[in-house]
Image (cartoon, rainbow, N blue to C red):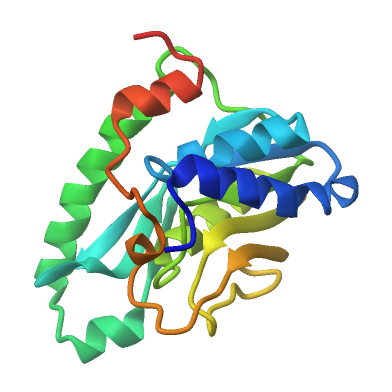
Length: 211
């Protein structure tokens, strides 16, 4: 265990981000729902930056949903073609997973946007935050969404990631900030004391949406 919970992880990530804040004009902090939002909230407070969500959904393998074969976001689709071929995923299986996750993407968009408009990203430094990186598919999709929405630069910031993982500079993110990169990395949750699921209500509370 490295972090007691997501709030602890967010506080430690905020300290790492604060050291770089002067290089980020007009920063906007974007949490990936649901677990990335309680991590992003302390970062936004530390940087005195607006907090918003960037909504993406992992496309899990048909026989192991925890392993991402890609991700979708608001107008963005990222696939791990090598993994799809290696696991023998058919076009029909991929389409079925994508249809299910597209429905959840739409539901979350309605739930977290409500009457609240997205924070304008044109010309901003988009700081994309999640509770960790495993395969990176979701993080890459989120960075692609931020870039497509006009962000001048994209920073990916997470508490924990595998030691050999990094985004593609200028493609996924222009900068990568990570608090811990432990050996024997198997899953994000193994590095948290409390990794219980974040609720929709908690995400809405952190975004300032009244229940």
